[in-house]
Length: 469
Image (cartoon, rainbow, N blue to C red):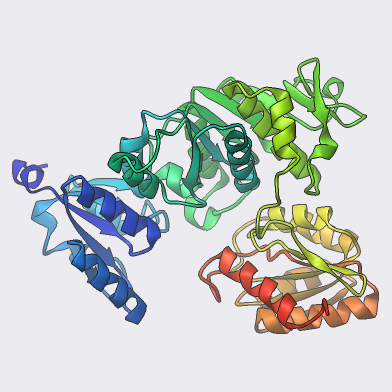
């Protein structure tokens, strides 16, 4: 990099999403020159841009896809470029920028430069990481620890870093980070005190190309963590244990059934143990599913490492509420229970949801299908459901996959979630099904901003349709 670039110190942030805005504000507060580049252009973004310009942050709405030519006016004075997790780290434009010796870093990487002095927990995994993150946060806050969670959920890490830098909050005892593979990939400097790996199944392969790359990215976070905690019930992780850094293993099976004994486990009577010490009964957890017992063990292992006594953990878990959009109980009407599982954006996560609710059920699924093996999902459909209602851009493709599996239940395709919900209610009544679950097995971006937006729409639909009156 030339001395001119270093002296000018222009920092470009890619993306006008919340993490991009927070990253720009963090840079501005540190006295840096900053510009935000956004591919899209609409009235909402123009209003946001105007407000940021009043604060001294320039925004350029490109109105076109990311291209190296977008950077021409500033290329000679650019010191670094901050990349949103939503942009492929191997995008051709980013490669061209690297070839010009410009520093590229993720928003989480930028934030970590201000947060790396804190004790921290980094949670990753294909599924389960949001519940574990929230559970640990709840336990710590219930026991008077000053804790903050963010990253892939909640606040962007740069927002937390900005508050920390401005001294707007008491020093954190623990920073709890949910980290996606995208964030880990573009933030190789994050090295948590405690690293947790919840599960590993194929996901995001449309971006990471193959399972090996996806595994390598997740593994790198654990390699940089001082203490590592793994789920031994996950077959892939357990099979790969010799390739993983040494750590603490947890599992819901009775300890004697493992060839490789976990430190935290559950006996036949449902009691959770730490080695040979009985801690508390699994019934303190009020949310359903074996996967949530795995999540409980991971959270227990982490908070025990921090120093929370097991009585305090038990008391905290007793008041832990379900995570919105993940097997969220919405109510019961006409003997049918409704669940919002919008966070299930892949086949494996949807399998977990279907296994956890009352069956037979009616499944509402669809959106943008990700790469992945649907075999277990199809098998679960046959075991758990009386019917399926599909919606969204991938509905026809998913329907073909289901037809090829010789599924015997009824399958209906609708354009929207509202139409799908109405159809699911009719099928549930006709088949005397016990539950209706929105567990899409797909990303939401064809019709929604994110899975929260989709889940909130479903919750509103359930209320608007008057089924609980």
